[in-house]
Image (cartoon, rainbow, N blue to C red; front, side):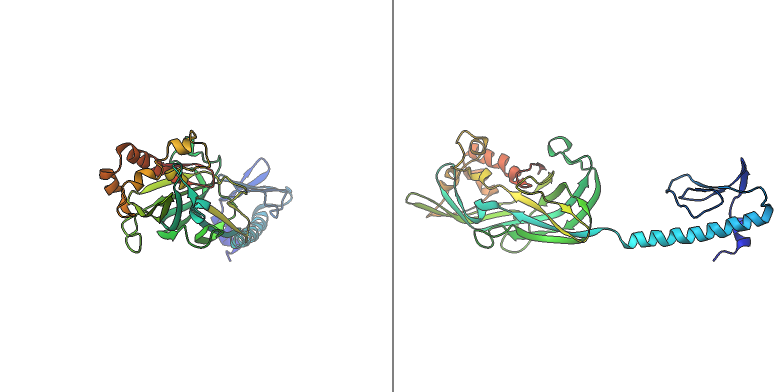
Length: 327
């Protein structure tokens, strides 16, 4: 503890308009001869003491110092207590290929498509609390976040794992995420260096059937993409984390963008912008197609290939919410 005699030499104490002014760092105290009232923190601050003129000289200074020392000890304990009670919870991250992956669908050109595996590798996964809310159409890559939670990566997951009613695939979690509303997320789709999808960021494995034709396909994508997305849009809100609670955020991938969907009007942009499966089926040999973007650049119909190149970056969503993307 600082002795009172030391306090008198350490504090710059001077009289101003009938009160003692004691400069202190990071707080303001103003009370009539009583330092027990803590009002608020500030960057340029002082203690203002009004005192009874009957108190003179060292006597009043010693009383001031005793109160200052006691007050600083109290504030220090309060700050330690607040720090130990920081409001945090667990933020879970999930990836979802939707029912198109889990249950299959019919492409715009009539192919029934089912998936055995959809390997995707994600990294640099971050969730943000932003105010004002991040807008992928206006803000691009520029996220001004008050809070950032970093899951990291890479994580290679199979979006087709499990049954037709399986929940979105768990990717990872952060246990000490600050509480609040996470209304933006960013992630990258990158090449993996080992395993079933080695050398690729996305691998689609499945079967396409149409009338008396069947094609067992493996379509691999080596291109890497970066997605920056706003708030999740869906039947329920996501990303609202309470103290000691659990919340989740979802990275959603719309594979009907590649093949189209027969249940959507053919003149809808979903179908007019999608290559469909016919351009892939033409390349199959003996009912088998094993290809990647380099092979398709050479052998696929040029218009269909360009449609594929243009549509792949739009796979990433947050539910039905959109993302800003680049290669």
